Length: 110
Image (tube, rainbow, N blue to C red; front, side, top):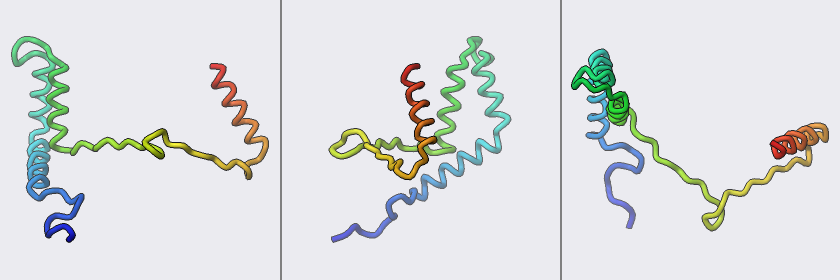
């Protein structure tokens, strides 16, 4: 028996989409204020201690609401090993092959 009715795979939850849109609009409508608040944190106006790292952390936290994080993807070869690639150079002109080999040799020499 297949999956039941519901949201198809990959389609974002409606509430999540609405929430992100609301936060995006809030940030857009308050862009000047947000910039000023981040500047206050970075310069220490809020508590007397400059904290640029905290301002960057706050900015990164806000960005997560406006733009979703991308998931990481790992590419592996057979059995979980490295990906192996082959290149067919049989139709490549010999002068081009020679240039590639010279570049490779130079790179290996450092």
